[in-house]
Length: 355
Image (tube, rainbow, N blue to C red; front, side):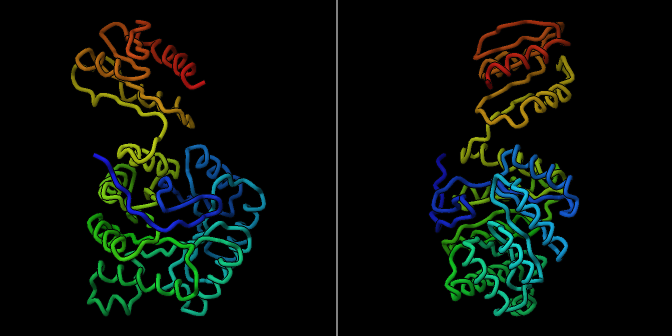
């Protein structure tokens, strides 16, 4: 199956190209309080190391805007940074003037046409990008009433209304997002917006939930849309560490053949034949590959039924037996060692492959 992506307009977020066939970017949002300098700098560095393409930071008040400016001045960002703004248009302007590559706003709650126009004028001067963010929980009440409470119709209308607003201000360096907590609503809404406009579309399921539930919901929602060629940037929203959002996003794209995510791990689901603590061993292998960008396939298999076959198909693999474990390199067994030594030997061979 070949996925043919929809052709969208190209916009610039800092030096990052979005749309028009550019690689789909993986985004996340910091969880740390912006005033906690040590924590947020650590999180930003972790996001960069994990392969995050765009980092978004909430800026809820003047103190946060001041902290945002200091973060920009610290030169910590190696990827574009977006300020997330609600309600106060002045914060958007402050962040743009501080050096934000982009801002995320909902014109419906930023204070009307005149205030939105001031924000857009600032974005023009600084060559900043804008994301129009429409969420199911913050739809304009008049639009919702007009559509008799229909979330899908209201969100699509809101998106198109805001597109026309920015176009009337002669501003085109923007993308759209329309997120609902319902996977099916998100799919329907994004399909409809994609049919009606050619601006880049950011995909996400809002308030997706904790790690497993949120990852599954996002994988289904984003996977359907991406397979149809819809979407230029993504975020997997999780009630968990931001680096896990990035990991999940890369795996979704890699699974669809839309982007390489570096190392891929295959491991058996375990059963009564398993000869080792496979979940614990896989956890250790995942720790070994943090920050590794090289394209490799690793296999960790728990018994002799499918283990040797899967391990041979990998660049590096382990297959456990009753007393020992076999280490495979490019399809051939290179060592058989006691099970308590296999991780040590695996790590040595992995280091050789990634150097």
